[in-house]
Length: 404
Image 1 (spheres, rainbow, N blue to C red):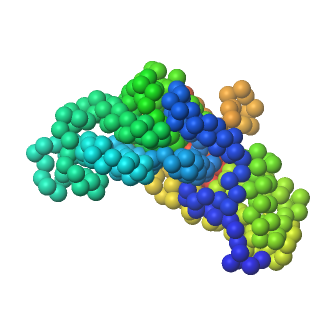
Image 2: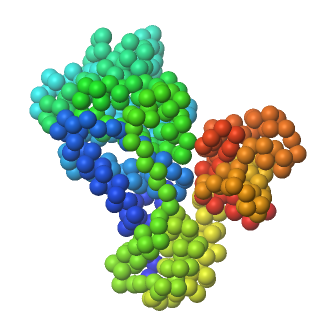
């Protein structure tokens, strides 16, 4: 097969040629956009799921839908070592520019509030190089979003930005990737600001994406967060959607898969979108002709697995210390043991009790807390419920066992 015409795109956050299986989320978001723009009450949105299920791709697709409706949009990626003020200010600066409000005085006022919000992080006595601003050439506003209390400031900031959008009958969409990495104070402030926007009817919504424990992070910050956001779990694709993700791009390039090949591809990928793209690319490059067969999949599987071992699994494994790697391997072994026992303790996310991990390592659970907490911070594992942990990466346990 011609590698130049290979349609598959196994990149981080890169939109696949066919965004299969996400039509329901896209249609629901179109309704949200219309309702908010017309002053109807609507909740902000949170997407959760494992690595590789396409959360970032879907987040970008939702943002594109908002842009098509002439909303002002901005996107940021949360980081554990970074506060919310600076990246959010950049995102809102872009959103205000996209709105295209015709009254420059109103725009300048809001830009001044954004600048005041951003610069408050450095403090009044900060050196010039630390008085950061997101490319805004108007003076910082005084007495608005500059109190130093992130919750008060964020409510005031959203209120002013939302008012600017309401003047035009449009909305503001703030898209936050890796939302679970926001600090506790920032999460609390974001929830409070979304709550205020919902009560006031201003057209500002937040769309967040993060790991499966993100709802627990939000709930721990504000008890009302369960009613504040609409939660959507993004999972692997059903068989028909997985087949479409492979067949539609191939058809556009005058190629096809036979039924046995599609069976083999689903068995190999488990329906995870990133794996579908990785296997699709490898199979296309090695298949001699169309239609692609199960034999072609078998020949290409080692190359796809090698690519995933380096770019998807290995890059995460390398971030762990030797002690953390022992903990990860013990998790993989504990999951296999639970599956072999066939007990009711097995769930659909492959989580394991922390006590089982400790037993595999022959140590007390308390002594393993530092390794577990470090892995949680690195985003390699997560805790969906107290006393249980799971990998954030699908098939990671299998990778660890095969690695050894």
